[in-house]
Image (cartoon, rainbow, N blue to C red; front, side, top):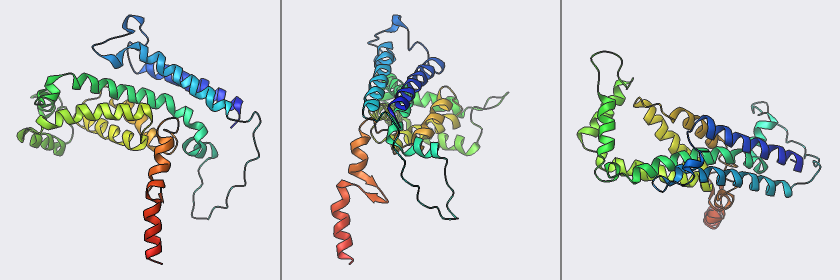
Length: 268
């Protein structure tokens, strides 16, 4: 990656953010909604702030790169049973310089979750007894006399009916509301992006099984890409420090290196 390449990628990322905010959301650029104290995260002020962060982050990344491309190190030999990925795909998912590409996707998906969660945590129908979720489940499990029911799979309808009968909505409602806020914040600040995106897609999946389309197909698709790019998607964010500290199951981070060393010594 060179400076020129980083500037081009930054421009493309800024354009991607503008496209997502225009195509899959409403009113994010309206100056009449520049600040909305009732639904803060829907204010267009955040649209321009996040757009500015993408530009500034991209410029800072570019300034750390050389003007000309360095000679790439020779690629390790692959074994016959190992299927190679295209170079671009490997860089997109594993090269930290491509983190700027994932920033607009993180910001868009995170803001959508944060906005949805903010609406719910401000509503007693979600936070105090879960009446809103109860109504949603009741509408989802209803089977009309004519036409198709909202839920396609009978086992999922039985599952929701079981939760209704046992009044799980009383604690599930606040759990969903707070969970949406936490997912939104984590994606925006880049904290454990892969895990946060996974829980987001899990909720999208369940909403779609219950017959609710809304923004769920778009958020689900974008969330899958964030899961695939978990190593680099949050590099311009807290994951730059969290992932090396926590590590992965196959490579312990700084936090577990001591325990790993003790175990290795004890088995020697």
